Image 1 (spheres, rainbow, N blue to C red):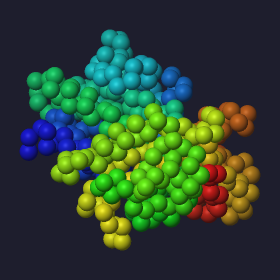
Image 2 (cartoon, one colour):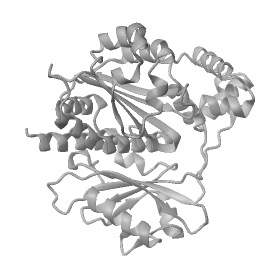
Image 3 (tube, one colour):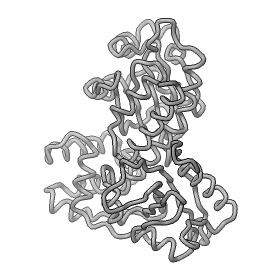
Length: 384
């Protein structure tokens, strides 16, 4: 397989991983092979505090094999004391830095992260990248050592640079699906989701199917509309960009790989916008009963907020009032820092409440708590 084919395979796998049709393990292995490196560590943080970013999520793979335990060890032991993090958080968007350039000469002599963790993960000749993520998040991508002993070359760096927009798009789509409680949902299941608009397009770009949320947006014609079976934005500049993104996602020559993309669509209501994520759908990913699908359009209304009853959470899960308020806030998308500010608590106090909740429910991950709260809460439909 030549490099162009490898690049196409990696991009297609990113699209499938975004929709949950393939595992990050497979995608990571393809990216490693394309770029000639031993592994990657993808981390999502809330970076509003550049000196103390809040850890939210990570995926750590080495030649396609999960390093989940090492990822957990880094998050709990090394990350809070990793000297390079404040410098990494201040890197320009998509800037590629060698790991040794993120420590001072003195820090390199004593850093536990450099001498212990990166030795075990073969990352002391690695590269680190920070990208602007969606909704104020930061994407940190740590690349392990190159597979060749000669070190990194310009061709590898170019491939990495070309991958960055697609990796950012992967994170955007995954976050949109996570916020809609739709991670792992099939194409058929997505149609029943009431928290995100879903539109399926065929190979000509015609609308094949919509869910109720998307239909409401099209019916109200407040930013998007269905014109003769085709998706249109009311503002000419938005419509021109929408056409370009659809053409990229659904290539004219069907043998070519489509490309995912995102955009903001202005609505007729002042200061009101919709976020669109346009994702190619591989033929083998199509569910029985939804034929001819070539692309999926997700419509996210940033103004639609979840409202979760903390009293119901307390009564159902046996939590205290304070614990149930923290659980509800996490499920609504608030960070630990957000909750601390809103409740006039220290962040350490919020973390203590979360640990208490985990102990009571027998869980270990914040994502598990959010899923439990979602499953027992009646979420109202976002306003059109």
